[in-house]
Length: 114
Length: 108
Image (cartoon, rainbow over all chains, first blue to last red; front, side):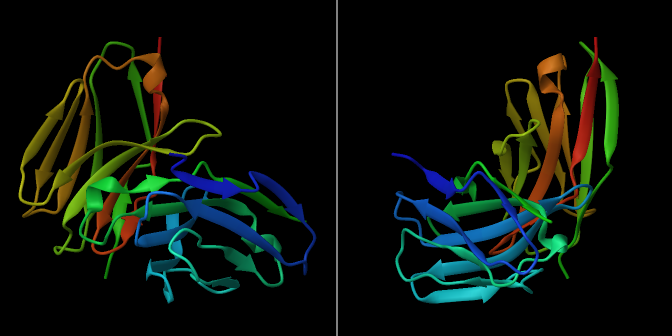
C-alpha cells in the first residue's frame, strides 16, 4: 500500500514551459485534490475531484488544468509556467467527502519556475 | 465564505506547554484538523475533532473546540525540541481549507 504518490519531487522549469505533476493513490479513494503551499499563506486549494470524470475548481485554479480519467490518478498540468507558480504542491486523497478524518497527503513536489 | 486564521509564530521553552490557536468562519465545518509540517517534509495529520465535540485528548495533544466562537486550539504538553515545526489547522466543509500555519519554535 503506497498511499499517495507524487512525482516529480523536484522540478525546475523555464517560463512558458509546460509540465504535468503526477499524483496516484492506491486506496480506491473517490476524492482527490491539489494544493499549493506558499510561505505565510498556508495551503490553498487549486482543483479537486469527487470521482472519476468529475473535477472542480478550488481557490486558485488559474494557470492549472486537471483531469480524472481513472480513480487512481489525478494529474495537475501547468500549461505555460510562470514564476508566480513557484511553490510546493501537495496532492491529497480521501475515501469520500464525509470521511474527513482519512485524508492522506503526498510528500510534496517542489517546483521552481525561472 | 471560508476562511481560517492562525497566528504566525509561537516560541516556548522546552518542557512548557504550547497553545496554538485557530479561528474559522464556516459554521458548516464537519471536521477540524491539526497538521504538522517539519522542514522539507509533507503534511502529517496530528489529530482531528468532529464538530459536535468540545475536546479531544491524544497523549500530549489536547484539542479544544468552541463552536460558538468558531475557535480551535491545540495544546502540546511538555513541549520538546522535536515539536519544532509548522502547525496548520484546517476545516473540512467538503474540501479542506487551511490556515496560514503557525511556526512553533522550541528553545532548549
